[in-house]
Image 1 (cartoon, one colour):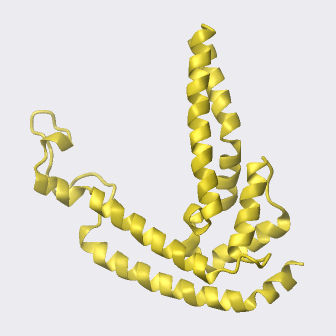
Image 2 (cartoon, rainbow, N blue to C red):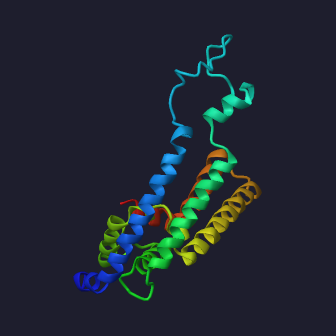
Length: 206
């Protein structure tokens, strides 16, 4: 049962907690380093980037390089975020014993496979997944990097969805559907192709 499985993985759990503490400290250091450059979604009340003629916020195309650097993230910032996420995912993979049925990567993969078939995971796996998320909140959102199998599956599914939608657009044009018929057909195609992704996202978001 769930209690026995969690008890058997106690040593892994302890290791996970120490790893998560290390990850937490790393994230704190990253956050502190970015504090001076933090951007927030808000109305501009302090930079006075208002265009006098229109009364609207100045368009990015009209801002100086200094103003853009102060207000927006850049490619280098995003590359840094991605690198940090990969480092965290690597630490999670190294600390996890996927051979244990109750391990994080083990239950994550079973959950993903269940969703890929269009069904929700078992109650047991749902409870195990909730346990691992509670003891390691830094994992959330990094599922496709914590498990290479899931990452590959997600990338392949995106390609299938894009190809499917483009195919539906072409088929609707050939069939000479009117605008509403075409819209409904493309939407239904996308919903069918993305069903497993929606179930997985809803499961991980709980």
